[in-house]
Amino acid sequence: MSRILIDLPDAQVEALAVVVETEHRSRAAIIRDAIDAYIANHKQAHGAEVFGLWKSKKVDGLEYQQELRAEW
Image 1 (cartoon, rainbow, N blue to C red):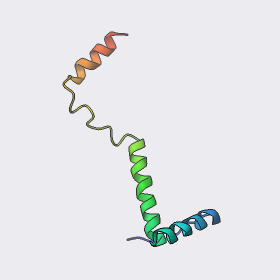
Image 2 (image 1 turned 90 degrees about the vertical axis):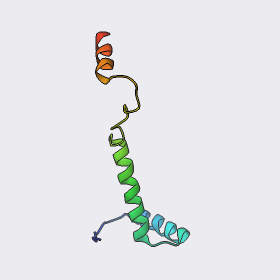
Image 3 (image 1 turned 135 degrees about the vertical axis):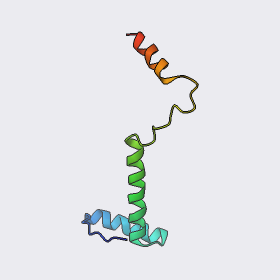
């Protein structure tokens, strides 16, 4: 595990302290969870989840594409 140094505004440090007290967990654990959630959200928002969406379709992708282009 690596260590990093970050600068946070006082308001974020205070809000984080409230979460630490409420959840009875370490600040580092909460920050790791927040980063994991951000990364998962970022992947989803940037198309990592779109691969394989057509695997359950009963339509040939090329035929579908040609039908759409024929409308032009």
